[in-house]
Image 1 (cartoon, helix red, strand yellow):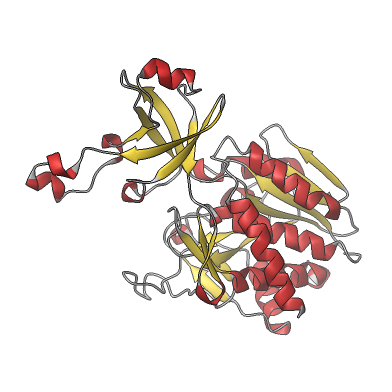
Image 2 (cartoon, helix red, strand yellow):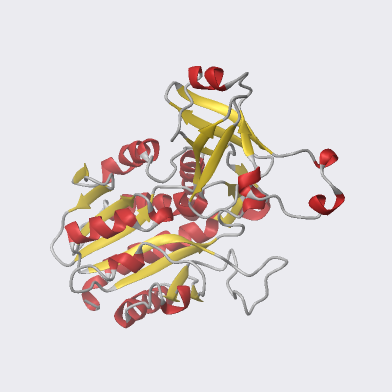
Length: 357
C-alpha cells in the first residue's frame, strides 16, 4: 500500500510541475512552485543571483548537492511582422519537425496568450517542397492578431517567450506523457527525497537545488556549485532509452520501467565521466536495497553534473536519470515506477553516505 500511495503522490506532483511553464531564463513560476512544495521539508531556503532555488537541510557530515533543473526548452519572439505574425528562435534544443502545427502559450507582458505554429500551406507548395522538412525559420506563430499594432496591444513584444501548450496525460501501465519531463521529473524526485529525509536525522548537510538555464548551457549549476562547494553532488535528470521503433540497442540499451539510470559517462566522455567512488556508492546501495537500476553510457547530451564536477578543485559527481521517450518534444513519456525507484535509491544512498565518503 505504501508503494502504491507513493506512486499516486508522485504522479500528482509530476502533473502539477509539468503543467507549469518556465522557459530557460524565465523559471519564476516553476521556482515559486518548487519553493512551496519543498519548504516544509528543509531548514532554510533562498534564491541566489542567477535565480537558482537553494534549499538546505542541515546535518553533521558531508555537504551533498542534489541538482535538478527548473527550465524547459521553449521559444522566443524575435520579430513581429506588419500582419501580426511572430517569428521566433528556439531556446534550447528542438527538433524542428516536432514544433510544426503545435499550440503554444506566449508569456506576454499582459498575461498568457494562445497561439499556433504555422507555415506555408502544403496545398500551395511545389511537389519538391512538400517532400522536404519544414525548417524553423519558415515557421511563424499566429495569435490571431490583425496587425503588428494589435499584437503589441495584446502584450507581445520582442523577447516574449513561448512554451508548448500541452498538459499531463496518463497512459497505460503507469506510463504518463507531457511536455517538460526534462526536467520536472528531476524536481519531483528532489521534493520526494527531501520529504522522506525530513522524517529522521541524516548524517549529511543536504542542498536541494532547482537550477536555472540548464538547457542553454548548464549556467545555473555552474554558479551555484561554486557558491555551495559541496563534497559530493548528484544531478537528477532524464535520458534517452532505446526501447521504441527507430532506435537500436546499440544506440541505447536503456528501457523505461527498468529502474533509474546511473550514468557511467555521457557525451562520449566530453561531459561527465562519473567519479568511481560515486559509481560504487550508487551501485552497491541499489544492490543492497534491491532497487532496480540501469547503467548508462551515452554519446549525446549531458547534464548539470558536467559543470558541477569541474567546480573549484573538483567535486565527486554523478547523475541519476529517468529513461524518458521522445525527450525534447511536446510528448515526452516515462514510467512513474522509475521515479519511485529513483527516490528510494537517492534516499538510501544519503542514509549510508558516511560508509563511502
